[in-house]
Amino acid sequence: MGKAATTGLELCALMWAADGVHELTVRVLRVQPGEIGVVVAAPAIGDALADVLAGLAQPRRGTVSLDGVPVTGRPAGRCPIALVPPGGGLLPQLTVERNVGFGLSGQMPRSAWRGRVNEVLGQLQLESLRRKRPHEISPVQRLRVAVARALCAPVEPLAVVVEDRRGQIPGRAAAVTAAAQDLSVLVITDAPERGGGLTPATQAACRPARDKDPGQDQDPGPGPDSAGGPGRPLPGDAVSGRS
Image (cartoon, rainbow, N blue to C red; front, side):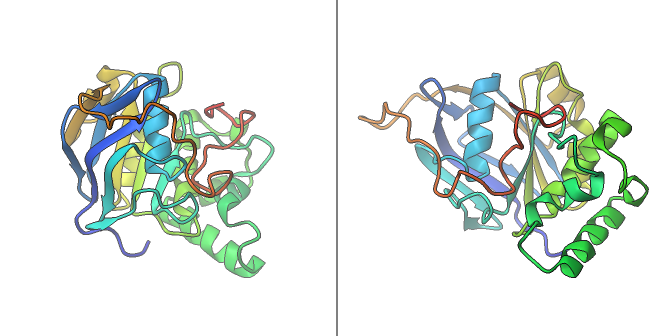
């Protein structure tokens, strides 16, 4: 599947805006390739953190690094951190094949697009589902397809953020699938019992920032080029996606 990070995902002294300014309960959170980390956060706070990690918004302070290289603020589409929204967020009108290749559409010749999609489907053993639509496959299969879509991006990801929410199928299948590809996986969940069930290598919660920058009470807004890109959760008509 390509070169994976050797030192994994690292969040250092990260602060972000979400109805105030928030931070993790640990100063440094590291997730090695093939491991799963968990952050417990209320939905709005977790969504805002996921947006920062995927390059859809800027943090207030701190750094996000992969393989020792800072990627903080790198815009979606050029950030090697992919996002799997709650429930997978597949587009219901598209087949599995077209959902997986969605982020590459129009960015390469058709033959190259099909080759890349075929590679990812084969890697995750999803070839038999290629012609099916999301409503024709199981919720667990939807999550695995969502991971395949995350992998099939212009910038091959080194880490995957899985958003897990009460009321949606648990994100465990997505997290385990991504970790099996030797990626660093961070699950952001509002259900602590689900996070514990993943036996995470590292775990943290969120809290209001204790030392936010003075004069930083305005929302910094979205990151550069955040209006699109494969990292953004798909629209509200997506199957079990974040609306």
